[in-house]
Image 1 (cartoon, rainbow, N blue to C red):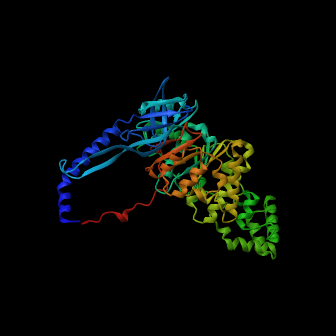
Image 2 (tube, helix red, strand yellow):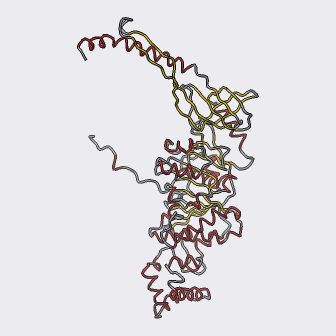
Length: 516
């Protein structure tokens, strides 16, 4: 470039900025004139266009002015589009410089939504952000006339209360969120409301001791809520290996089902035929009244398969597990499951150090609930960290049994009153025959694209744009969809009534040092 050309451009620079600002002013003026209009061919879904300045977001609510009234809609897809605008031309340097030509692009929002409620097809209906009172009115009117679970507020409509339909939890539920999303805390909120607002019995397999303090009221809980909870807390059983007395988590080996007993000892009826036969003899003797201590003495003093079985049990450390009770009159945890005087039974698996011991307890609970299905007692079974209880690929015999029990309950439990809530941060690790039976979804922050895509495919009844938003959710926010709500919605969970157990270790090592 010659020195003369450089000087010419430098001289024209102020005019370039002026022309740019003029062009941007024209662009903004054109964009502001875009009318926010929606069209529906079926009265259920609609497409729309709107100026960028309008407060719209995926999952948010809009007011639709219709020929015969109005309706509330929900946005399920939102994108930025650009279209060619007018062509501008002129001369730089006060009209004496080089001529320029430029075509503006006009930006606007386009997307799609769903009409909430009844409507007819419409064309070019005015679309504006819905007032929160309008959203609240719709939610209240659409809720069935039965118990509701107030779990928090809308994350996208200020001050709007979210109340789930308690009846929706007679279906299976998948509760998912990555580490740090607030999953455990929010699950506690849901459990509290189920116990307060319904008569449904709840059994919790609690691997992280998150509900270990469910009987304790938080110090800042309002007095009315605290009083209501104390009337429930008396019927909450918490069984922990670290507790004493009746609260100690314990099992009686001979109270377990035969398949669970065999899995605990690692016996296969075909490949371990002789030891398995000796094991059956022991079970029969115990049922005839022989004391466990006497059986143990006989095994040690006997040669052959019985001695081999005793060696197997000793090598596995089975006899040293802390959960065993030798008292024939103490049926332990399985006896608790058969009782009718409780509302919630929390099985604190987090209090058990030995992995195989934890696996046995979880398997025993699911096996007993499925075994007693003919009782038709409605029970919600909550399985946290479900990828360890019903994994896609079981790693050992006890996991295979617990997985099969979970699959059976997922497939057929509803007709017996058994519903499940499976929770995890690793959705692709949970057995697909369990997840595929879930009619409710509670999805908290999930950033991994593979997990989001998997969930979008599995829960295809949820609009894709809503599941895609999960990566942007804040702590304690969730997408709730399925039978428990009138439509998929974003919720911010409220405060718990009870103390949270299993809290994270404080990050005191990251505290600022004196002088920093």
